[in-house]
Length: 332
Image (cartoon, rainbow, N blue to C red; front, top):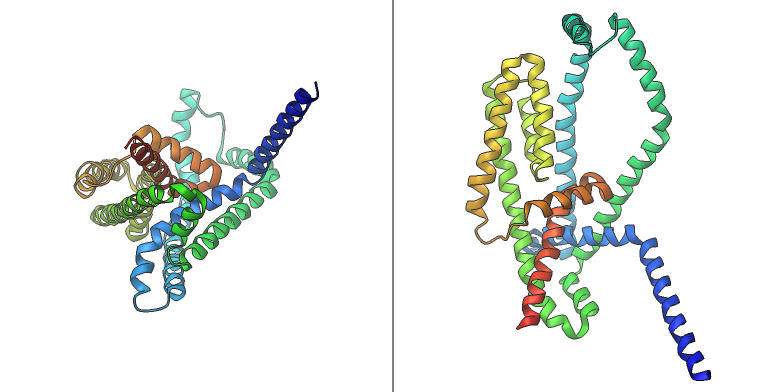
């Protein structure tokens, strides 16, 4: 009886430890996600940092690369937001005229029941008052996203400062399996860096063709809009879809003809980039299944917003390729 009681107590203790461990993992799940995304960022910045560290200390190399990235990002946000605010202001000024033109047709179809533009604005004000109740929640979400991004970049920066820092962590975690894991790691690191290069070339390609197209059609703010299209091309599927929608809507404010033409041209740019340029460059890169890409984007976007969507694909690619190669090595 005593023997059975001892085994039972020991088992209960192990179950309690396991539950406690699961609870701790759940409690720090956000931090674990930050660490994963920081790993991806550290990998993406590893090569330029290694290149600069041949001439200057590694800490300064990492600082230059990360600061350069933030300056580029801030400049891009400025260029993106400027035309959007101006066009939105222009749209608001022209809205009464648009309303007067389309109101009879919409009313005939039973789509709208507003008798005048004044009634429309009153209903819109009511909507804004209702929506403002969520203002505090929206602000906290915004600052939460900023703090998450800051934490991720801070972790990535400190990983980048340490030479072969990621490899040292892998060796510490995997112990006896470290040789196999490090071998796979080096292969994956090369592929993720290669993926980064492909995406940058693809983004530049899309931005240049978009700029030429918008310039030829005399669409307002061609530089800013083409930069937006190029930048969001970094996010597969959803990025080009969102950027393209914004550009087409702004083109439609000029004329229906321009809107349709811009839609066709942006679609062709995506076809060329996705089916001609990327396959030529990515002969050595193993693409993820489309379903996994979309699933990664949705999960990354849900968990970490825009940064989650941007980093989700390389992170998924890392795990996909890691487990693929790990099981191959285990079979050998």
